[in-house]
Image 1 (spheres, rainbow, N blue to C red):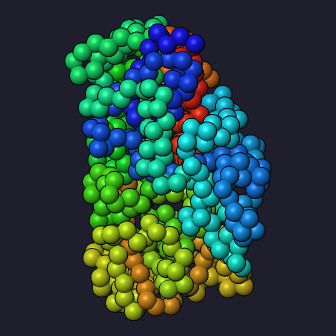
Image 2 (tube, rainbow, N blue to C red; image 1 turned 120 degrees about the vertical axis):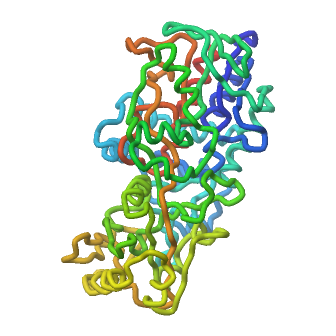
Image 3 (cartoon, rainbow, N blue to C red; image 1 turned 60 degrees about the vertical axis):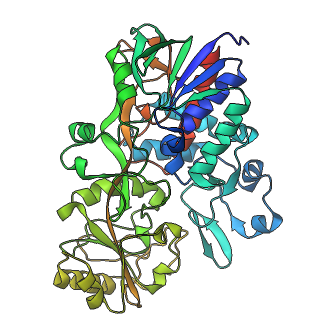
Length: 485
């Protein structure tokens, strides 16, 4: 190990912090360059719920990640299992079999070891009760392959990683925007930051994608994407991706695709760290209608973890780019905390007619007919069970609901107005299994590494919930170790 080796890390979210810690552990002198001010540090990671998708073989692996798991929690929970084959298949299927096989194989293989390493760094993991489990017959049943979250959510995650980084001597500089990379397509020797040249033995790029760049959203995602609300950091504008492309890095991945969700219509245009959880992802428990009063997709096609990341694009295509999630008293009791945030665009009434009167711009007659037709089309023989694909479906509708169909019939009735909230973009830079950035000729660019949301090739079309934080940690750790060596 050689403390004279200097590594620059661009960014300060989960991927960047894991890279910095890994590089420092492997003997490097590490400097982090964060574009945001100190009060807005943490990148997109700070805006997440802190869920990590990982391979695990039942409760014994959960116990390794959650050493303070009580006996009562063990007995009252069914954690199931999530093996490597299932994780790999989820990444393949949700990407339409386009995901980079080398990268996703590494992601799956290193998921549990990386989370255990993070635990050693001081990150505290907990079972994701409330958001990733439902209580059925007195037991917490986990569903959708997503079981673990960090204490304190995304903010708790980045705070824990900052404590460890600072303990290892990592220097963090805020309000430092990287403008250019120094070098060429064969080798990088530093950056230009705030107009000054800063040299280093290696540079790790982990500054996120371009979801906060309005112009790029329209350029790459298409018409209408300038209207999307930004769910997370306003500092992820793609400038670091552009800096790498400018010296010959290879672009990779789904540049016309992104992770976007149903987002509260009353939310700010940019993520508000004081009001998190403004996404509305439990549409599986009700129905969703547009301004024409029509349902426009199958709300029960799969667990929300496998469908929620394309819902923002779906609502953006509807009239006015908005719609409403509709629930009755049967469902509101099991909606999670994201439906109880302040200033939510929430409407309630004792009758469906009175509810429709509060939904500005909706076709009332069509809405009432949609609900009536939906209620009549449900197969009441199948019992409702939100923890499994219960097969409780409708038949004969233009958009049948495949699971979790219950009549919207018990007052009070509640509607949440939603629009598109963009979380992250899928296009970015090409890396190899060493997390080294590749040039357009397919060769590694010496001294340049990347991790996190600016890496392309992992996600196309859809995204399995929790994979983003895990991939950021896995490739951040790999990048840090290789940059230090």
